[in-house]
Amino acid sequence: MVSEADVEVDAALRETLLGAFPEDAWLSEEAHDDRERLLHRRVWIVDPLDGTREFLQGVPEYAVSIALALNGQAVMGVVYNPDADEMYAATVDSDDDRFSLEEAAALSESYMLVGRGEWHYGDLPPVPDGTKVMPVGSIAYRMALLATGKGCLVFTPGRRSEWDLAAGAALLGAAGATVTDIDGKPLQFNQAEPSVRGLIAARSNIHGEARRMWQNSGWQIH
Image 1 (tube, rainbow, N blue to C red):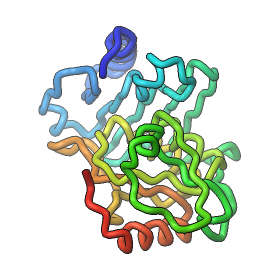
Image 2 (image 1 turned 120 degrees about the horizontal axis):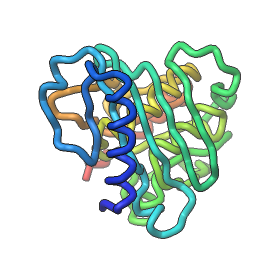
Image 3 (image 1 turned 135 degrees about the vertical axis):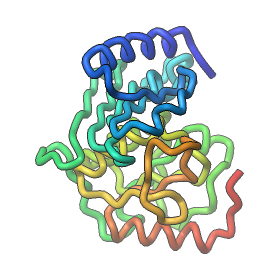
Image 4 (image 1 turned 180 degrees about the horizontal axis):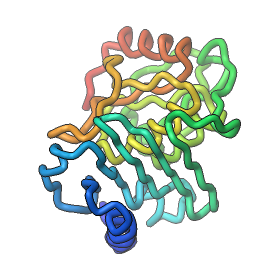
C-alpha cells in the first residue's frame, strides 16, 4: 500500500540526506533497490511512512523511520510520529535517559506490543494466559515506544523489511534491549535480500520468555 505522501517524503529525505552525505548509499521502501549499496559501509535505510494503512485510515500510529547502518549495524535511528508530534532519535551508544526499558520480571507484568493488523486478523501464535496485548500500527513506532519504557516486548512472527526495523533497532540498542529475528539471530542490515524473519525485542529475560513462547507454539510463519 503506497500513498502520495510515501513518495513525497521519500524524495525529500533522499535529497536532504544524500545531499549532505553524497558518498553514502540508500535503501528505501519507495525507491529502486540499487545493489551497489552492498559495496558501501554507510547506508541510509528509510521507510518514509511506516504504517500507511493507519495514515490513510486516520489512526495516529504511523511514523517516518530513518536509520543509518554502518557495516551492517543500525547505529543511528530516528522515528517520528507526525500526528502525535513525537520524535525519537538516538545513536546506538547514546547515553540518553529517555531510552530505558520498562522493568518487568515477566511478560504477564506488562504489555506485548503487536501490529494492529496481526491482532485483528489472527496472525499471531497463541499467547500465554494472562498476557496483555497492545496493538499498535507502525512497527517502527512500536519499537520506539518500547525503547522509551512502554510495554515490555515487541513481537512479530512474519517477515519484515529492513526499512521497517532499522531505526527502531538503533533506538532499542540505546535502551539496552536484546533485538533478534524470530529465530534468536542478531539483526544484520544492508543484506542482499533486505528482509528479516520476524522480530523479538525486549529485555534479556523477557526476550527469553518470548522465544520459549514462540518455540512452544508450533506456529508456522504465514
